[in-house]
Image 1 (cartoon, rainbow, N blue to C red):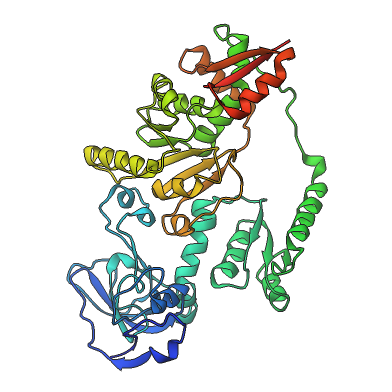
Image 2 (cartoon, rainbow, N blue to C red; image 1 turned 90 degrees about the vertical axis):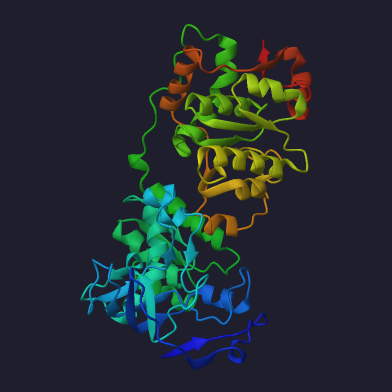
Length: 470
């Protein structure tokens, strides 16, 4: 059969020099595989990465291609759901199918996951391909081979982003970056399927095409003022719905009798923030491994206790003088995130826990308010499908991140600010039960306000919150 082959990399993007159409042996299906006569194959950016040999060097010689559609012409003797003659498309996510993530329906979080046709070869740019039965899907009769091949990976990606991950809901305002792209143009349509209002970004020549697909507004993200334009659209939409805005009747909650005024004052904002981060946003579950950055801080020391309330294993970061205090609050491990080797130390703890429990090593939830200096390091520590939830950036907001730790690991990055009144009441209830307490590091009077703020900014000798009284 004929296939599109390259035997060396082209880091300078001179693909013409390395690509050739060659005769290669016809594939034969294994017992669990189907053999497909390819009718259409589509290009993806991972084809380009493969030819460049970067960011992942692929096996050479290589036949790329992660999208294909065609007819089944043979099946292995263990195949039960696909038969000869079926019109099928490729699901390019190859996973082990037996780990905890796979058996929970999250094969995209499998630590052994590979992209077929990119990390494996041969791929779809051939006349025939073999794939496991589990990695092919039937095409509806009304969908052409070309449509199926063009959609498969991009449709899966866009659907998983919006429906699986973001869990979009009718009435939401959705911004689709790069609306003319393979994944972007499908994102527009999926968002409209869910009755969302869509702002798409595209060049001027592609604006009408985006609107034909359903985009309500189109802006050019290459224009210097595109952010201002989007913000204006948002304000216009918000003002048109002003008559439907609801506000809480009151913004106070009762304090349990067993909680002092000082404890309540020290807890209110930080308790609400920490509770909303872990329970409301990250939705922590018993047994998870939680990393609490800055465990000695007002929000951090409460984060430790909330995670332990949910029976999580907690790694807290703190200076040596605050380590014992973090452990008193329930932290199972404490590392100093100011030490150069702190990431290696956390990774070692993760591996030790995984070896004992039999799971995949890594952090399930990272609780961040430090920001710039440690943001990317936290991403590297997360396991596949892990979550980083952030409520602030005390070291700076301009964090540099390696996006491979986001898209390839399926990482959740969640912002969190404040929370609901009900969440504050939940937190205070557990304070009343003695399960959570505020660490009051110092008390000052109004006359000592300058001293109080000086200690607050420096953090010297401080664990928890500072109280100030008239």
